[in-house]
Length: 611
Ligand code: GTP
Ligand code: SPV
Ligand code: MN
Image (cartoon, rainbow, N blue to C red; front, side, top):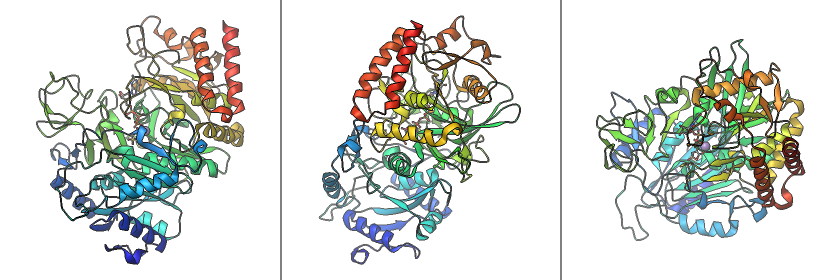
């Protein structure tokens, strides 16, 4: 009961009784010194940042060069999502499926009760009401994150619509998802002995847990990214994918952009690429082909729902970008770089001698001296990177000059094209059009990609990452494929067209064949001309390929035979992939939808026809 809480609840007047009770229960368990409800007002941000500068969590950057910018350095053990410590606690194991770590919900609740017992001693417990998506929008949803990390509060204030307006919607009776987070580093022990605060408190033991039936999130031990900003992967993907299945919509790891043709026609495109595989880059694309314009709507997550006209409408549930820093440069992504000129939190990048930031790939020549992400001196001779490969910037989406005027339209934008992509050195062509929605779902379901530094694991290792959702699907992946097939039936001929892309194909010497970045506008232009019915395609094993003369390559110098290599399809290699896919599907037993098995057999017949 809220009344029994030792610490004052400090609840705002409009906080509903059920919310107050839950906050009181979490406080009883975690025993914070104080409870603070986040309002989202400007003076609150000032106080928070000042306090974090005092504890060393934030280092102010040179305010003349980067006003409002700060650097955070995490603990070296807390630098990325921890997939091995991420759990789906569904009542039945088969509802988590073979690609998730399942944990028995009863047992996990016992473990969490132990871990969270006294976890916030000596700390402030922050209560953050937030909206995923524009406030009050019909695709948007609400949540409350309780956390003991001011860094998480500051990040949530950038990444979501957090504070009083979200609480007002909750007070008005809107549905909300509860999410509890602790870094697991209490400052006082059970006997009342105090220890000093450190710059990045966290715990060696981590639990990122989801309860799909009760729609709850409990996260312990990490302060980094998707482990801790619970609106992002935990809610907007893992829990939302379950809500989407039950309510008939889609929660996806996709960027959203608007692209306007020289004739002034608007197209909307979403794209699922695995973590650190180019969503932010594509969302801020600067086309190298004249006359085309790209506007950014989202860079990581899309929530999509059929609208009254039967088309699929997408919103970006987030309000900011938590983007990969390394590789961001004036050449690769000037739009992102310019957005980072002010009011940005940088995490685990390097610090220059004049109080600015640097990371690998920002400039051709590294500075002669830096402080690296661990806080040590660094020179170009150093053997470790200056910035952590998963170092990130946290910035309000509105700061990107490419942001679309419609990015906060609560109704969303109608989706014309869906892209699936991954990092593939071989086999997968630059672009390929799916024969049908079912074929598109097959392509999405069988994506493999070389792993990146966005999660713990072996960088470069090829793994299946269906729909770029491997670490983010809150239920059985095969049921998720069935849900996609069902959505296709509902959308019928109004469904978006599906294409597969691969910017990462390499030659024998390991060099990228395709220049990528702004030039990705070229295959995308072809896709849009397909949608507009302006161009023919040729049938191939992977799907429909462009006739090479139809690609707009004006102003691009490609080496001899490179274009052919980008579209080369080796039937033997595809036969091997088909065998691997058959093996892969076996993992899901009889849950694999019949339509996907049918697609596999159609690929095999295309292979034998071309042999
Ligand atoms: P998450 O935020 O982790 O979900 O990732 P993301 O998909 O938004 O990643 P991002 O756009 O930040 O991609 C980062 C990496 O992809 C950087 O190393 C980029 O240099 C690289 N990248 C992006 N686009 C291209 C491209 O067209 N070609 C090549 N070769 N690399 C690219
Ligand atoms: C990803 O890994 O796909 C990210 C970063 O977008 S995190 O928020 O840490 O999950
Ligand atoms: Mn992501």
